[in-house]
Image (tube, rainbow, N blue to C red; front, side):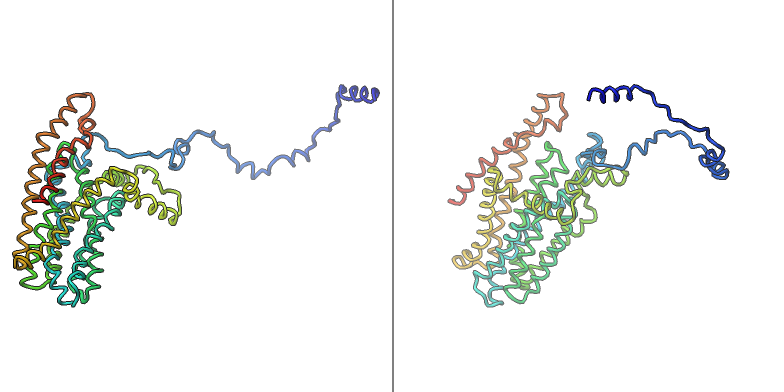
Length: 424
């Protein structure tokens, strides 16, 4: 064994020389390219870095994560639009809200005539009135998420013409069942008129200047029900209950269809994305990017469209505020259904005289709007100015956003007044 290891060691230390022969001309010919190929080949230039190639295709890492205004004076920002344009937008969205609620109460004087024509009970005809509010409740939660995806303008000015078509159908209804179904779907497509106004006004006006436009918008959906029974009684008594549908269409054309071509989109993400597309700039990646259309649709429905319902059942503040608002609206529409029967049966009022009783709601709305403006001027705006003066290093828009609780004192006074008014 030792001898074998010694032999291996001697072999490893021995340099082995492999004999070679000189290359012949035949070998050189084999290694050299043909003459015509050698002439065709030209020396390649040295490689230089290409900046465009280094950047590569647009990728989520290279694209911006968000888009924002170019500065506080960006002309695309709705806060910097002219006052004329912003007030026009405010008037239009308030008119849209007025149409949505006017269509609900204008049918009040038509309850008895429709019950007589279709040979139905009065309670069944009342369903044709109340089913509209149920449609508003079903359509409302989906309007705001759609507007945050496609913008304010498409949602409002696509849903309202569809609403008008269903209203047109109610004017030609030949049965109580058809009337109930058409009124329900009219309410569904009228829902964006009520659920998008606050967001639109937030797009248009900074917080310190929002009280006046907000007072107008808040008054509109209450003023619609106030004038609806009076105008509905006038046309029902003189021309028949079907004219309530034609009256709704008249308001829709005057307050929605005519201003639509002059209405501007105001939602910030949509405006910024449109500008980026026109300028050829990369867009931020979409949350649904990379998914198949079926998966993207499932995520959109399960997350975006159901977000309001999820907040309703998981956020105590949202639940409490919605319950309070629902009670107030339910109380208001209970009056619409009860007043015609009470004043007609016990006091002998005709439909036109009964409609006059609803003007008290309009008077209350006017007084409430004036109160809101005074509250904003005497209470809210001084606190905004104080917040700005306290921290002058921050821009005004950063300090003017006071906590929402600063607007509660007026509601804390108005809430008990509702109960007192019911007893009176």
